[in-house]
Image 1 (cartoon, one colour):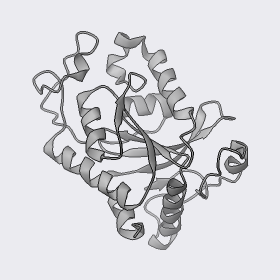
Image 2 (tube, one colour; image 1 turned 90 degrees about the vertical axis):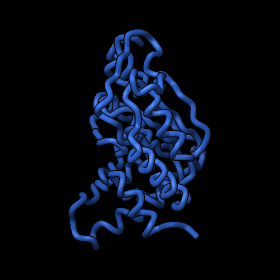
Image 3 (tube, rainbow, N blue to C red; image 1 turned 180 degrees about the horizontal axis):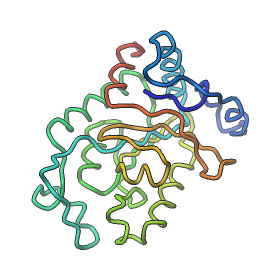
Image 4 (cartoon, rainbow, N blue to C red; image 1 turned 30 degrees about the vertical axis):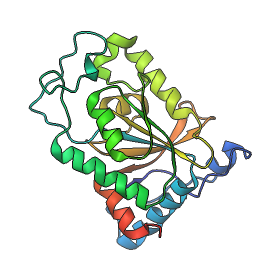
Length: 228
């Protein structure tokens, strides 16, 4: 886990200005430091997510790269046929289930689960088992951008989603694509990796990057901080 910003104190409720808690943010530690230095950051992140107010963006889990995407028309990306679109590998399905179990063990509340319409993203979201999954073209693979308004429109839609405050005392989970994450936020995750964002209305983007997590980080956090 790489903590990007903040003491990661739980966010206040919607009655307090966002600027109050954003003003308290300060630089944290980076993955690879001494264990004693990492644990406070881990605990702060878990406490913040339990209080809600964040958006967790997952890249879909591991896929079978022997398969290729064949998008020739709008909606082709929804196909779960491995002859037409790249799908999750069995290892990716196992990873998604494992991450979901860890998040549930940590008692991190999830109010909304959004997914790209791509089958591999929607399947990842369902396997996380964090709540009903709503697919949306607001979260789109950049390689299909020309079918849905172009690159800049795809980026703007994703940024609007990321800047939207989550439901009270809950978090939003997004499952999408690495190329969209990079284009819309500047962060980048490998398959099944994730990034945590907080709404930041006073910033140019409307959101702030809080932490980046590898797939194994969720299991590690659950082993250390799972709630009874």
